[in-house]
Image (tube, rainbow, N blue to C red):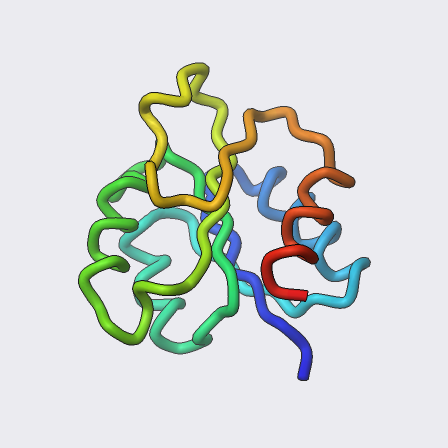
Length: 117
């Protein structure tokens, strides 16, 4: 069964770039523009992994992550933070890793493959 990745970012260029990277490597994808929309997509799509931007309109990544962590069905979904915020201390401690924009797509795919296959 093909693994699915939820891409959460408010920049449509980044979303398209990530979707292309994941699709080219055999993953299904879905996307959301902020944390509020991401929670709706999460419930519909049940992804195997989430890439999460931190700074977005409506609902920031950390707030989405807190909501995710409170739900038994979703709390174990691995999260990779991909953010343009310069400081890692603003990131999410329980994320499997943190990548700064711009990031190396090969490094990202390596992390994804090691995490969900």
